[in-house]
Length: 186
Image 1: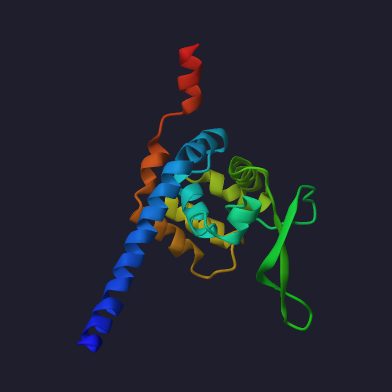
Image 2 (image 1 turned 180 degrees about the vertical axis):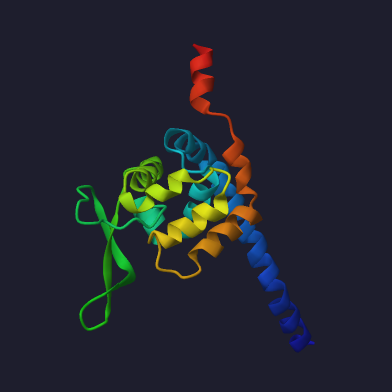
């Protein structure tokens, strides 16, 4: 009897995890979709891409980088960064090949992270080709980000596309410009 119970429990756990994970993703999306849409209209980066990256990079807002540094996009310091920093092990190695702590940007708020992410893509030369793509071409954006060097993960584009399709993030690419709504009210 105990063995049957144990097998049933093991078979049931993955479904619970997936359900909890989906709830966390939808809660994350609901919390940050408006910022992603605002940034899309300010810079031209599809909201679906921004949300997919944030979901992935921040582990739906639960990673130590997200919770301790408000960094939802995994953006490292770079030589020119003058703001606050946060260190943790990622993928940088010393001369001996030993994993060392990487310097990441730290932000006062999550909104600051979203704005910096948009500026990071908008004003860096290696991402300029992305802005020639249609904002509805999320696949092109995902593969373009990988090709431009945003992430070292060889499956990065596929992970973004999976997030976009699983959570129907393209609906946010069609959102009206909230800046126009504000102007109309005046």
